[in-house]
Image 1: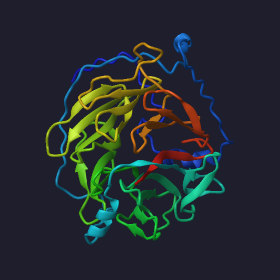
Image 2: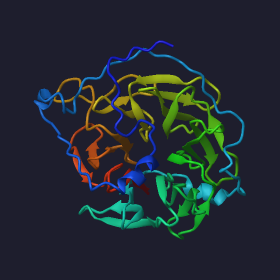
Image 3: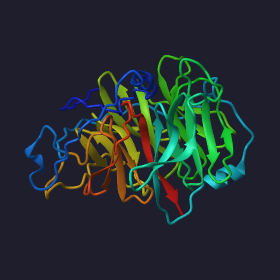
Image 4: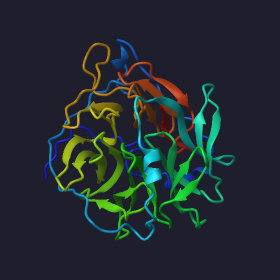
Length: 371
């Protein structure tokens, strides 16, 4: 397979590296605060080293095989009895609006999932103390906003609470749909509420894999064949039969779109990572060269203009997350906190200074869907 990429990929946070590989090290470090320089307006490209409108190269398309294979997940995954009520509670209704922005915080005083108040303070959503949640990796909202899924991985020792959990926020009922010490990250809930995609260890224990499981845990997890490399960041289309994901091979990252009915996936981006599918299904935001790029599911660049001219990327470098109404994007950076901008690239501002891999330990910002 021949690829033509003009720029090296800058993989601040979307390189498939595990949040857990940093959480222990951060306890030995002081509090870090990165400084993001934001350039906006007609002269925004006057400082190309930091410009949010950097020009990104293109790549030749290639195809690799991918499909959902029948099989079983790792030993950590177990089946539960079907729960139609849970699936019904997870399903969305329309119209939708944005609820509070939530994120993970794990430091010396707090551990759990928190919503960000308007003054920048935090309100506890899911309390998960580190004596049972040593490594709280990621979470995902059900499309209804009534349920939240989160995953806990093993640290140096097991606590017995590891696995994927589904919590009903009104009753605080906590249902464990997988168990065991397998690494789990990048949870993504399908738009119809029926399934969860996530990254975990492959069967051989030699790398990572993407799997899909029923949201009530009633069926074994099915692996997605993502080809050679380390997969990350599964994201659902509005059609719950399609996924986009990133794959890292050596020092480069690629984004694919795959139908889950056995058809081959399509390469839509080279030197890009952390795809996020828009709620209406029309665009996929990706972390590209020093910022965020928008693509159609076929790979056409539809990034908004910057200062009246085509712009390689917008925003800042990081992992994009769409708001439920599709009008905003949050960007999770490695050391500079979380930023929010309009989907057209305007009004970029800091939303929280809690970091992804720094001493503060905030990660995975995501808005609660509200009906």
